[in-house]
Amino acid sequence: MNMRSFVLTTVACALLAPAGLLMAQASNAPAKPAAAKAVAPKAAVSKTIVTHGTISSIDANQLVLSEKGKDGKTSTKTFMLDKGTAKTGSLQTGSEVTVHYKSDNDHLMATSLVGKAEKAVAKPAAKAPAKK
Image (cartoon, rainbow, N blue to C red; front, side):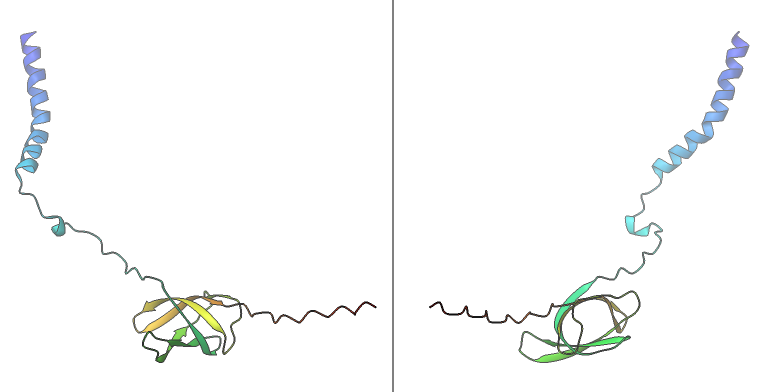
């Protein structure tokens, strides 16, 4: 029995020794700074920006927007449009519009256009005929 216990103990030690050495090496290794870890580069996250203004011109490919700055000066921005641009409301020259867009290099890509609803002109109520 002693020989059998000796053999089993030796085999167990032989199997567990490499794992123990690896663990000892890993714990003694100097810690690497978090920035040194290899991390896959993240895709550039483009943030959606919102602006308001008046449509100067619009066609299937672009929108030119006039907007008044805080200093009171009017400036224009040109937005690219594509099939994915959501369009709602009145989108005609002179209409007020809210533009959600992303800045892609030097291009402003509109993701949605929301035109303000036309104000309905209230007709004056017809006067009831005078009672006699």
